[in-house]
Image (cartoon, rainbow over all chains, first blue to last red; front, side, top):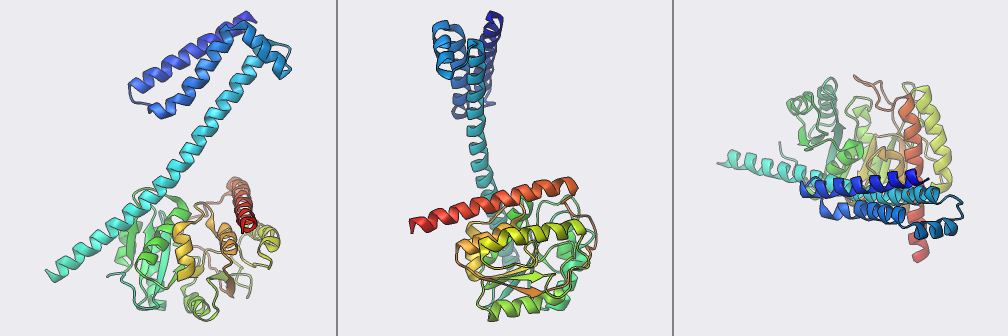
Length: 120
Length: 243
C-alpha cells in the first residue's frame, strides 16, 4: 500500500508542476488553475500525512486508507470536471450570443455601406 | 435588397448549412410563391457555395462567423428580424422539404388565430408520405410525452416549418433552444402562456443531402430532447410556485 501512496504523491507533484508550468506559459488562465492546484495539493497532503489518511478512511467507512485516498481523489477530480463543465457551458452561451451579435452588426454595416454606395 | 420591414411585414428565415445543392431552388421557389416577401438565409458557416448561391437566387444572407448549429442559426435570424421590426417570421428548412405553397396558409393563421406560433403539420391532412418510419415513430413518442405537459395534443412536434409573431419573436430572441429546438420550443411557449395552432402542410423529399439525425444520433436526439423538455418543465414549475 505504501507503493500506491508514493505513486499518488508523485502524481500530485507532477500535476502541480504541470499546472504551474501551463500557467507560466499562459496555456491555462490562473482562475482555471485554482481547482486543479487545490485538488493536487489535497492529494499531496493527504497522501503524505498518514494519521489524516487513517482518520479519513475511518470517516468514510473504508478499511484500506489508500483506497479512501483514491475515492477522495476521484471525488475531487469529479468536482473539478463539473466546475469546468459549468464554465464551458457559460462560455458557449456567451460565444453563441457574441457570434450572433457579430453577424448582425456585420449585416447592418454591410447594409449601410451598400446604402451609401447607392446614394453616393 | 434591404431587409427594412414594412408594417405588419413577413420575413422568411431559412437556416442553411452546406446546402448548395438545394438552397438556390428553395429561395427561387419561395420568391415565386411569395413575391415581394424578403428571404433571409442564415448561413451557418457552410464550407460550400451555400451563401453565394442563396444571394444569386435573390436572398439576403446572414453569414455566421462560426458554426452554431440549427438553434443558434435560427435564433440569429429571429434576433435580426426582431431588431428590424418584423411582425411575422416563417422559418423553413434549406433542404427543400418544406413546400413554399403553404406559406400563405401559415401567414393567414398567424394573422387570424391570435396564436403566437403556427406549426406546419404533416399529420393533419396526410402530408407525411415522405416521413421515414423511424421519424414517424419518434414523432408519436414525443406526442405522448408532450400531451400532459402542453395539456393538448400536438400532431407534428418535430416540424421545422413554423411561423411566429412578434410576441414569440421577442421571447425567442432572448431564449431559444440551441440543439434540436422544435420540441423544446413548444415547452418554452407553454411556460410563457403562449398558444400555438397547427395547419396542414405537405412535406416533400429533401432536394439533396441526408438528415443529420442518423440511427445512432436518434438515441442522443431522444435523450437530449427529453432532458431539455424536463429542464424546461422544472423551470416553469419553479416560477409558477414563486408566483
